[in-house]
Length: 67
Image (cartoon, rainbow, N blue to C red; front, side, top):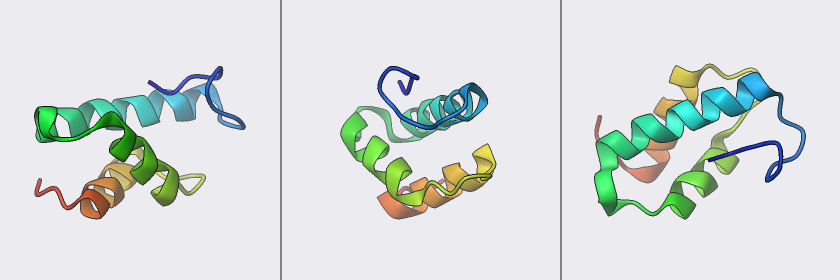
């Protein structure tokens, strides 16, 4: 889970959206995907102003998940 304590420069609404995307990805990937991989993919794909759907699509594509 991303929080203000373990990130820097994110607003609470952005953190809420990122955590929602993580939950969606975990539902698709199940236990086959390490949390660190998801976090790294989010870090690499994040662009300020993205919607949750845009981030979800970018991260699942980076991770090679078929959704």
